Image (cartoon, rainbow, N blue to C red; front, side):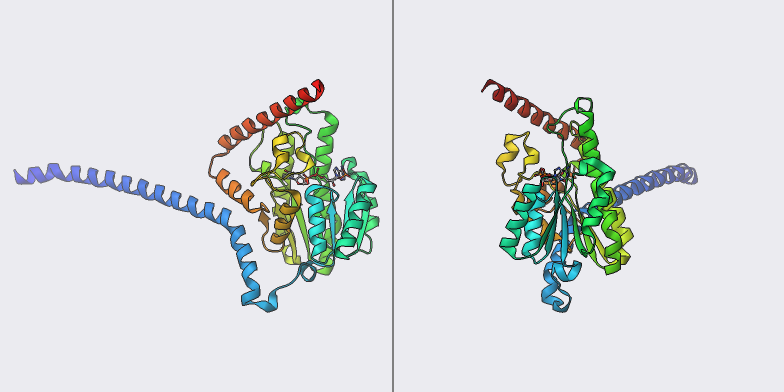
Length: 342
Ligand SMILES: NC(=O)c1ccc[n+]([C@@H]2O[C@H](COP(=O)([O-])OP(=O)(O)OC[C@H]3O[C@@H](n4cnc5c(N)ncnc54)[C@H](OP(=O)(O)O)[C@@H]3O)[C@@H](O)[C@H]2O)c1
């Protein structure tokens, strides 16, 4: 009788053991996946902050290694879209740190005014080049000739074009879309290609590519702009690897909103706030990160927002992005209607 009972119990125990074993394995896997996700998330979001902190502390612990931007990268910086907004901020901030500046944009009068202001304020040399990046391939030979003999240490690929206001792809003029592609994709690619050989010879240099927070997910109503900014991040990370052995730094800067004329479609954005700084403040922070981290939002409140947004899945970020761009479009239409009435 007893042996019969144990005969009946044994298979039950085995079944129980195997069920609890499977349950244990599933739980362990879930824990492990959770742990790995948290570690990866923290690494992704904190790596920039850790690199910046290390660089800030370096002068105290390894004073012999600390260098100015001029020592680290060279004496000349080239900035595209340098007469307004973030580009102008970069030009002034780099000049303040002793670099000579080459300014590139479309309007001669604005170039001369900005160059004079920089020379008077910081006593560094300047040069300006008139070029319209929306024209595509034809402009680069002229820029190449103008840069002959200038040992470019830092290139800031800043110039960028957004829609005039958020709207669907089919409502955007064809010419504007070509402009956006030529400026946001073409300029970053071909300006980088133009300066890399000289940087390789010097065995030093930095390329700073200005992307945008809109690259974080596909963004409806600014679809092409956001896609081009995604391209910039992808290009930056890839050429960073290619150029590492040549001692050339490639930094991808991913700003959130900044008060500049690019955001003219929204009076709310133009007013600025804690999360939407003036261009000069933004550039001061962003230049501070140069040589310290390869990928950054460039500004501390933008870093907080970026980290928070990344907690959510892409589909949700897209919906929130769509909601926001719809609001901006409505705001733009209302302001246009008011203007017409006045
Ligand atoms: N503002 C933001 O909230 C924000 C957010 C994220 C990322 N970004 C990115 O930051 C970068 C700078 O934006 P921003 O807001 O500072 O721009 P911005 O204030 O509109 O200034 C644009 C600059 O580029 C020049 N420029 C415009 N079109 C040009 C062209 N076809 N060829 C040559 N130069 C041209 C302008 O001068 P001329 O008109 O005289 O040529 C001006 O100096 C862009 O890449 C943008 O996508 C901006």
